[in-house]
Image 1 (spheres, rainbow, N blue to C red):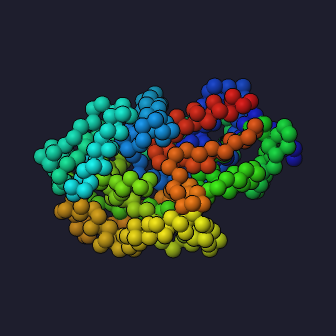
Image 2: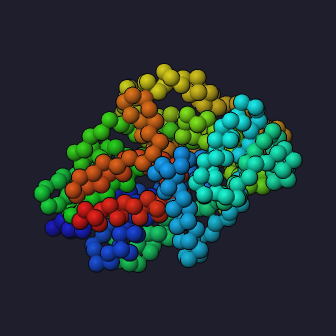
Image 3: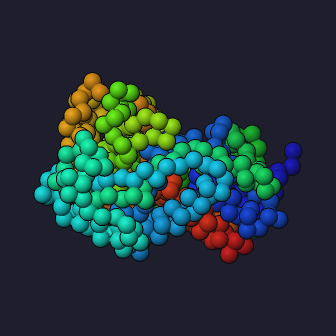
Amino acid sequence: MKSPVYDILIIGAGIVGAATAYHLIKKQPSLKIAILEKEASVSFHQSDRNSGVIHSGVYYEPGSAKAINCQKGYKSLLEFCSENDVDFDLCGKVIVANDESELATLDTIFKRGKANGLESIKYLDPQQIAEIEPYVKAIKGIHVPQAGIIDYLEVTQKITELFVRHGGEIFLLSKVLDIRQSDDLVEVICKNQTFKSKALVNCAGLYADKVAEMTGMKADFKIVPFRGEFYRLKKEKEYLVNGLIYPVPDMKFPFLGVHFTKRLRGGIEAGPNAVLSFRREGYKHLDIHPGELFESVTYPGFLRLASKFWKKGFEEMHRSFSPTAFVKSLQRLIPEIKLADIERSRSGVRAQALDRQGNLIYDYFILENEHITNLCNAPSPAATSGLAIGDFLSQKVLDKM
């Protein structure tokens, strides 16, 4: 059978890949565009396994791509959901400090939030915190009314539905095995079919580095997977949380710390922690892929990172295997929480790009040539920013064409 030829192929049907395809076909309806997805459904991995929070941009360095895309993405997300009847709830969040040593970081977050356009954020004293979250004990906090909750699976499904309605195609169960490039076309070999295209966009998430290598581009980085595990409050204890409750994060890391999250369809989750995953799509403690694990723990960047932050890593691993340790983290926010009040829920794996020097890559990272655009790193808040990132990538591809 002759291989179909497309104008643009997108690898990966998470929210970013879907948004890229959606923006492309809206801007150029005449183009023949398809998404290749290795799973049997869209949004199977990171886009549906995060905390479901609409991030406001309060944490991010003003002027960074992460901050700019979060601001644009936030606005685009709310507009898209309002126009397409996708539910969301701007329930607001509090970021709280328990110790004097956290106040300087809290001030940094507040200043960043203001610089990123969040004019309505405000400081909270203990009494004001209690008015919003009565069971939280803290010495100072920040209220971020713009933060909210959403179901990113539903968002991605709606984006892909509109993409198909506009004439796009989605090929599920189409795992990419190899990529070849000629002067005019990119050939993508999947298990059951081969595709040809004038342009290719890699939005493969947890395997973005592997797909980038297939395109012949090499960079000094590797995707190292970190698993985040969630607990949920038992039904009778859900009254303890009204919205979103976050600790002051350690700004040396891209993780925001164990927090409480109201869920859009009901329930309260606690988490996630951040531990090295033993496989890129390993959602359970004993999900192990020997090859992927060996690749992670022998990577020079990971060894350097581990040598610098072994104590932090040990604490996270201890919390992963010890519900008692997990509860102690939660008690820093709500002292009333007991071990009997929580039960294990779900987990997700985050794709974190790491360079050979042991530095976590905090911002977006793209490798490209005339025909191929590899999105190698799309860290949180990529789900909130998904429509903005997709808009950016779509324009980049069209400009090259």
